[in-house]
Length: 294
Image (cartoon, rainbow, N blue to C red; front, side):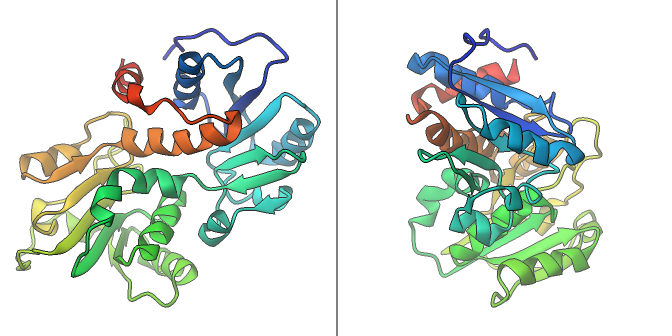
């Protein structure tokens, strides 16, 4: 996808996204869109950083006065932590950093914007009282770590589905050892179940795909609607394609859905404010979404 705006002049403030691979990242499009709307002289780029190059990358950027920080994607979200001067308490609790910011004193601080970005489209629901809150999360990688910590803080009981339930158990025990959470094999979701859910009035149920299943080039997430409790919100983090088979299944069964761009844009907005000192212009989200899907 070509970016809609040309890079700004050299020696202007800039941020970037790092990872391996990184060429597919939509973050430059999002941040450049906001920079243009706000008239900020700056840029946002992507930089391919392999695992063995991370320490050198951080050392070089420390000496660049124009560098405002970077977003961090796989496989660096944990490896970058010991290279920083300070870790925000939320990121420390999650055990992963996805945003590095040069602070006013020149030190480097690590944040996790995945957690607030994930929660953003759920804030109205979370303001309401509930008799019970449960989240079924598919996947146990880096994105799932942020979700588990964020949802546990909001009183959710969590059930993690994965190919390796033991890995999910270790993640739950690490992030919320006092919680009454559960794990289950991923393949149990594919076949119909005759489990009789109650009507769930007064409850908040989430079903979240935090895995690459359904992403372009990967097999779909196989989940039968009978595993989704009544009145659930079905939340997808995959952005390509925008409408995955999981979302289609949920919509056809009458469930409320949230697509992957909600978290992508939400977490980017938190990072943008830290990089460039102004809130992202969220009134233009519809236009931004159109660019992301063009």
